[in-house]
Image (cartoon, rainbow, N blue to C red):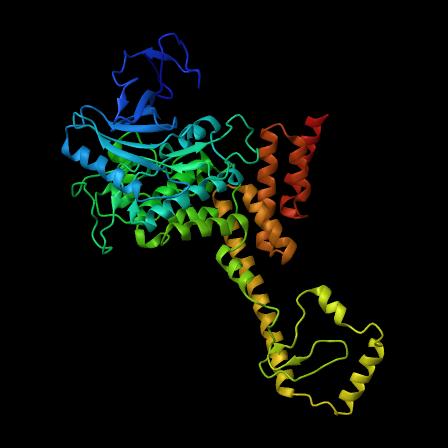
Length: 519
């Protein structure tokens, strides 16, 4: 029997390289379980992977021919009471969860020698960790459908009072993923192709929602240090917001290819989580451009104090989608569901009926049309609308039609309020955008700064201060293009610099140099 050092799958002796990834195969001897029938139901086919606690086999259910995964504790842990309890906890945690983005558990049993095992669906895919190693990082467009499925799976676990406590790319499996696609390829992550796995250190909340029913010893650290929340690192009690911290670390790594903290020493790494402020994704990857506000959402998830993070996973995801897609999902849904066709501004609106039009009575439309086509069909085609307008104006002038001045004043007041609110919203939006642009500029994220300030300039115009910051960003990007030998791109940035006498000499000199290089 041979083992692939890359994917941990066993193959027959006649293989020299792993058929899956071309990795080196080493001889490890024959596993006595290969070919055996477990629990009179499952025939063991081969190894599918292993971790610090357990080994996973690919098995086939004899009665159905269905491939499944059988997870069994390592032999040296099978006799340890704490390890067996933890294994039972995973079975209990996963069996209570039924969601497309969480691995499904089918069976649980004990071997004749007391060795426990669980049987789950067999996931034929790669881990998120493997995808990051192959791709470096994912674009925001690629990451969103992936992280949406992860958040939905974690949210379902939280609803069932289960905290994962070991969320990391190795515990997120992606199925039907083509890693050979170019970086900007569409549909890299398919719908319902993501599974959250390995609830080995999951924590169950008590029925009353108070103290944990966790089987871990008090003060014992559980999880993977690179993704652990500050409270996990300190061995303190945790709740679902610990998982949100881990999601923040995972999302940072997905987008940048880096984790917020890295250290050679395990204790130093854990101290960073406890004491050091996490860098923003813009600071981690200054050459990348991210949607304005995304860095702030992830930074909120990475706050040291759990009270400063998102209240739950749904809130975390909605904020991410709001800044990336540009809308508040909950608000949009509520607006779509609100019935608007029967709405009238004033409850005691005067009853006015024009020929061929539906009559307004009180606060309802009487026999209101169900569609634009029906409304048009009700109009009298022979009616002289021009004459009607003239006659209606004459009637008002002679004051034969009662005009309610309170309604008129209210309408004027509402119009002024709406215009004022619109102005304030635009002003706040511009202020908030320039504040974000300042942060990006301090992080040397000139692409992001330009993107925001150009948009503000188009909508509301820029002050002299921010025009200078925009010019500074153009200059920085022009020099960056020159370092990459892209002199045409550099000239395009230089042409955008305003006619500032302070910068004019430097801009002209750079243009001459760039044009000379293009000859």
